[in-house]
Every structure is written in C-alpha cells, then in structure tokens.
Image (cartoon, rainbow, N blue to C red; front, side, top):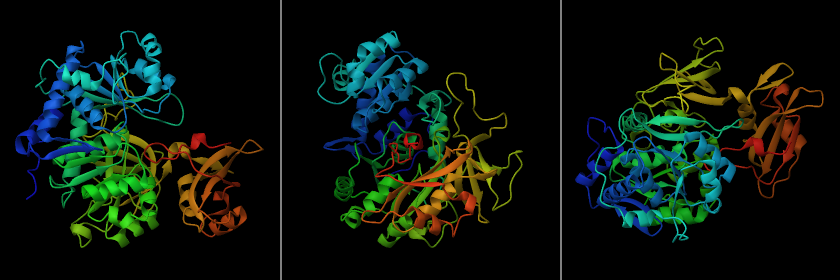
Length: 518
C-alpha cells in the first residue's frame, strides 16, 4: 500500500511536513547518500537538534545562512534545520571562487556560512573581513580544528527546536541567479511559493509519486531544480530520496540499480551519458518515470528511453517559479505509460495545475497558436522579487515575464525557442540560436552544439556554431552547413562552424556560452 499522502490542507511549513511523515512512517527510510541513511524519525530528530544549535550561535529570525556544500545528507539537514530555526537559506555553488562567494555573502548580509569548499575555508579571514560578524561552520569531512563542523553542532546541540520556523509568506530561500552578464541577483522564494509548487505537481493525475517511490537525484541541491524539484518533491510525497554527491555515469547507474530507483530526476546531459553506458538498461530496470529539465532534451534521446520502456518527460521552469512551470506529462489520462500522455519530443508541455501561462507579443498582446511569443506566468509559486526590495517581481496583476520565447501548438503544448536576450540580429533579421541548435543537433556526426552571436568584421552580428563531433566522426563544416541549409533560411546559417572537444556546462547541464572562445 502506498504511504499516506500529505494532508488535504497543504502544509504551511517544511517543519510541519517533516513532522507529518515522522508521525505517519517514522521507521521508513527518508534519505540515503553513499553509506549513510536516515529514517523519517531520525531526520526529524536531527533537524530539530541542528536547528537548536543554530539558534544557540546567536542567530535570530530572518538571519541569512549561506550553505556552500555538495549534495549530501548534511546539506539536507542544514537546509531544513535553518528553516526550522527561523532562518533564510542562501545556497552557494561549492565551485564558486572567493570573490563570487564574497559578493553573495555581502549582498545577502549572511550571518553564517556553512561550507565544505576548501577555498572558502582557507579564506575564512578574508570572508570575515568582507562581511564583518560572519560566523563559519565546516560541512563534511573530519574538520580542521579551526572551524566547528556540522557534526559537532549536532553532538553539542542543547536540545531541539520544535517550532515551525519559517512558514507561509516568510522568506525561505535566496537563490542567486547565475545570469550571463552583471552580478547575480537573489531571487526571493517564500515558504508558501516552494510548497505551492510542490502542491501544483501533486495535482497532476495520475500522481507523479507516492510514498512507495525511491527518487534518485544526481542534481546539486544548491540549484533550485535539485533543491525543490528533487528534495522538496520527495519530502512532499514522503518518498525515499537517494542522493548522488557527484555524477559518474557508470557509478550512478549501478547505484540506481542497487537502490531500486523508481523515479529519476536529472538534466539532459546526464540522460545522454547514461544512455551511452553498457549498464543503461540495468540501471533503469525499475524506473517507471524519468523527469528532465534545465536544458532542451533531444528528441532522439526521448526515443532511446521509450525503447527501454522508461518514459522520459521534459519540463520547463526557472528559479523565480520555484521552479516548475510546465511538464509534458500534464494532460488528460491517456493510454501512454502508467496512464499518462505519451512524451511529446521537443515540447515542454502544458502548465501545471494552478499555474497560468500566456504568450505575448512585443506589445503584450496574446499571440495565436503557432506564433512566437514571450512567456508570462502567474501562480502562487512565483517569487517575491529580487533581494532586497522585491524589484523585478510579478506585476500588480501577478504576471511575471520570464524573458523566454516559445510557440504553442493547437493542443496547448509549448515549444521553447530561446530567450529575448539570446536574440541575434543578422542583416536586419531576428535569429534565435535555439532554433539553429535544434537543426544542427539532428545532423549526423554532431554530438553537441552551441550557437551564439559574435561581432562580424563590419561591426554587425554574425552567428557562430561550436560543434562537438561524435567520436570518430569526420568534422566537415561545409557539409554541416549544406545539410543545415535544407531546414534553415540562409540568413539563419552560422557564418563560422568551429570544432571543440567539449562545451562548458553548468552543474545542471546548461551550456555556459560566455565561456566559449571568441
């Protein structure tokens, strides 16, 4: 029998959600990472103790706690404990440099940094000088003796913090958007927004998950997709969460098979690397549902998973929406896998229940199906604007312009085209690199491609394609352009096609185009 579902009335805090599962299924496994595992009762008890330890360090309601650590049980404990202690969590990528960390610490006014990053630990004095009064705690490892560790805080906790902490409209998380230009900005997500998005996912029929599911998550928890789309979903449904601290295709497939994973949440790059492994079928042997987001999902990859009997669904989301907006498993119950619609390759699907999406032209007038429009969204899952004053948030009617462009088909399913900021003006014509990438990505011998605008010799913009060939494939730019010209207008063809060994990716698989050579 499936475990009980969350209360009919949506929980108002993560502390209440955790208490619910502690009461309903205390002995069932809540989270596993490497050789560690915690039951729901153990998780609730350790979160309460760590919350009390954080308050003991002089932190008060609303203080910001930065967490710079890889995906781990300690991250889960710190995140939930901070919220239960009434604190605001500021996740930071462990790979960030000291100057990048300093920007986030000073901009957010963080009072505490919980970090496993060697660079940050070694630069503790520099960080304290930049952010006076900053306290530091080490996450992971045995500790250096210079900083207290999370495990020491747990061992020395004065008791437990049983209150709800952050709840309802309270600010819960400051997530700094990476962006391609300018300094990252902190998107303000309330407890209500985070839980609302989980409730919207829960309204999909048939249910996405139950308490009997084992959710495999190889995504970083410092990113909104892993934090709320993965960890949050498992907490909401009472499912067992299996964490992977790093990504190794062969090792994670073995871990999935060993754990009997039934749901996988990942990024397209991970799904592509899994599909290329000998252990592909065994790893996904018990998986009934695979969910992808953060970057476009190639159609042929969807087909590979369909052949395996594992439906691979794609969604669209963003930090400011906590994060899920659409999924292509949303629709009327159908004859597809598990009574769901068949995955529609290339589409990111329809809005979640409770989320409104509209496509607007440059004058903010609705566009017709098949016409290109800017995506605007409205829902209880939206952020409160950017830190500290809420600037850039939803308009007075609750609509938020994402900056993304899409086309809707007659069924209402969305197809992403690109971002407003990605627009390249070629000889007076608008070109969206995502459209060119979609064509090049289907060409024989092309493993991966990124397209962007570069200044031409006459000062105008030209398109440049960076291509990673398939192993053993001959790289012939002229032949690629000839093949692409059968699907693209001449002005949409790149002026240059450059061979590269690999494309730089973020932790969730997005291509960092600003790092490509000029």
